[in-house]
Image (tube, rainbow, N blue to C red; front, side, top):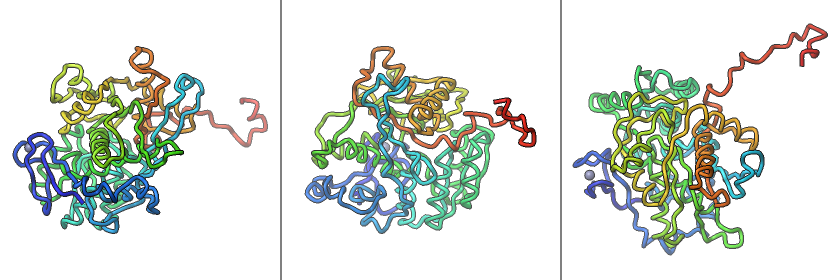
Length: 412
Ligand SMILES: [Zn+2]
């Protein structure tokens, strides 16, 4: 259980025993702190590995619960780290892996954040959560709310992929479509929370989605440990991450600091590579312009709905992680990222989401520019399943065979 909640921007401490959203002084995200020195002796890689629990709650000492039995869990986390086979365009990358987050409940990494946030909200008596979502966060919130017996109110851009809308409605969420972007939906959520007393579960506007997402960093370090020394976690040389709100990237960066303080790893860090879509790249632009915060990206448009986030409250935290790691930030066009999805599917047997396609093509670009050594240990994040997107192929384009025609196979 966390011992402190402090503002990531101004450092102001906030009480633990009540609901918190943004910092009351500066309106920036709060982060949870743990007594890591006290945990060093008992919370070790060996102890975690021996636990039978296959969910991310096996890291419960650094999550917002007193014991794992308090968690609202659907078995999230513990996703595979898939080594890429040296085929086709992957042949020049001998040590490339995908952390495949499509294995989570509701088929995306959003489950990690929601299990932690809904757990803490339930413990503090929340009855109704509300959030904006342009994609996978909606479904994840809807199912964790259902599990917790809470109401869930969702505001989604009207052109959100139908699969995300359908799964949310099926779970009993109240879904409102909005003729705007996720930032416009976020404004309605804020007004609705004030008016109706809902709890705002927007990205980084409460402290615990970050805590759930950070477990990707813990898992990765355990996944990469040498089999001969399984209790010595290890980090890769590079992590490629598709950034919308950026909670996972910020969360992993936090996890690395925690693991160092726990004595799990040394001070070496992977270079963090932040990937956005060419049609919506506020953080990449701020990285290039060397500013601390990112301005709203005008006319945001991309088929990668998880990347269609024109403004992010945690912008400075993402930029700090990328810069602090010696990493970089770049954009990929929609055409390219969709081509990337097809390459991953055909050569690796993995049905990645468009964001997964984007990080793969980003790695290719950085090798071509000479920035990235393809023989380094590289982890790409596939944040969800390609199944929820309908931009990849149109089934109507396939020919239909007339099975009553004896000559139908002649057309093959
Ligand atoms: Zn503050």
